[in-house]
Amino acid sequence: MLSGEYPPRWGGMGSVVYHLAGHLAKNGHRVSVITRSNGGKTIPTQSGVEIIEVGWAPIPMQFTRSYGRTALRALEKLHRRSTVDVIHLHLPLISWTKKQYVRAQKNVAPIVSSLHGSWLGERDGMRLAAKHKEAATWKNPNDLAILLSGRWFARFERAGVLSSKICVANSNATKEDFLSRYKPEKDWRCEVIHWGVDEAVFHPLNRDDEDSQLNHEKVRIKYGADDEAALSGEPDTKTPLLLAVGRLVARKGNRLLLHSMPHILDENPQAKLVIVGRGHMRKSLLKQAKRLGIEGAVSIESSLSFEELAQLYRSSDLVVYPSYYEGQGLIPLEAMSSGTAVVTVDHGPLPEMVDSQVGSLFKLGDAEDLAAKVNAELAEPQQRRVKGLTGRDKVLDLFTYAKNAADFEKLYEESRI
Image (cartoon, rainbow, N blue to C red; front, side):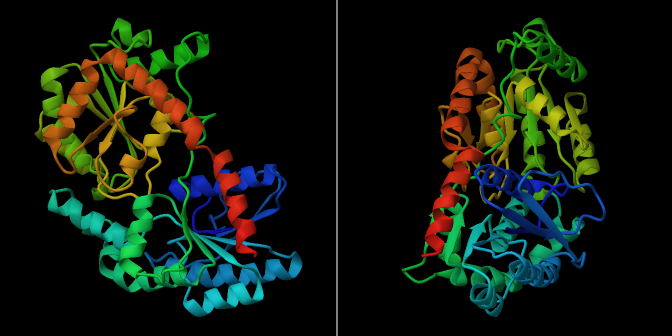
C-alpha cells in the first residue's frame, strides 16, 4: 500500500489504511505500507505489517509529487527484496504520471487505486462553502494551494483513473464525480467500497458497567449537560449535548452550525455544543460564538485522545455533521457505531450512510433547516435512542474493516487475472 497518511499522521485516509492493513495481515497476507516520514514520531506496530517511511518535500500539494517519486523507488526496491503481488494506491495524496503508472505495473505488479475524493471536488467544496459565507480559505495554506493548483494536479488524478487496473471509490458520489470529470472509457473498472470504522473503539454506552457510567458522567458534567436524565444515560434530557467532529476549515461547515445554534437554543435553552477538531478557524469560531451570544453554550476541543473522543461520541445526544464536501465522510459512521443518532447534509455521499432510520438530513447550507432537524430529533428522545441502536446495527452489517478486507481481497485477486 502507498498512502500519504499513516499514523501518527491520522486523518481519514491514515485511519482506514491502518485498519485495512491490520485486518489483511490477520487474514494471512504480507502487507507493506510505504508512507511519508513522520519526523521520528512513533508509529504504532501491527503484526504482519511492515512500514517503510520515505522522504517528501513539505510544500502544500507539491508533496504529493515528491512523495510519489520516493515511494515509487521504495516500491521497486521492496519488490527486488520480496515479490509484490498487488500495489494498492490511496489517491489523491500521491501524484503519479501515466509513465509512472506504466513503470510500476510493468516492473512490479498490477495497481488497485482507492479514490478517497478528488482535488477538484475539494476545490468545489471550498467554493460552495464560500458561497454560503464560511471563512476565507486563503487563511489556510493547504486550502489556498488546492484552490490555486487543484486543476493542475487533477492531471495526476486522471492518470490514476485511466491507468489503474481497478479503481475503488469510497462512495457512489465519488465514483460519479470521477466519471463526470475524467470521462473514462466504457470498460473502466471502478467498484464502490464504503470504508468502515473501528466498531470496537466506537461502541455504545454501557450503563451497566461502572467505569463506563463514571466516564459518561464526567463528560456530561464537564460540559454542563448534566441533569439527572443525562447523567443516567437517558435520552429525555433537558440538557442535550451536541457533538461536531472535523477539521476546523471552511468546508466542514462549522460557521453554519454556529449560526444554527440560536435557533436550537430557542427550543432547547440548556443545550451545549462541543466541536472537536484542529485548524486555523478556532479563534474565528470562538469570536463568532461570542457575537451570536452563544459562547456559554459552545466549547471547542483541539487535542482529545481517541479514547476521549470515543467517549464523547457515546455520551452525546446527537452528532451534527454539516460538511460541504466529502469523498465519503467517516464521522457519521463513528457516531452510528457509538449508538448516537446523526444529523447531516442531504448532499454528496452522506445520504448513502445516513437516512431517517438513523438520523436526519438537512438542506445544504441552510442553518434554519439544520436547527429544525436538530430540534426535531431532540423532541423525540425515545425515537432518537432507537435510531442510535439502528445505526449501530447498520455499521455492524455494512461498515466494518473486516468487510473492507474481504472486499479488497477479492479485488486484489481479480487485478492479477
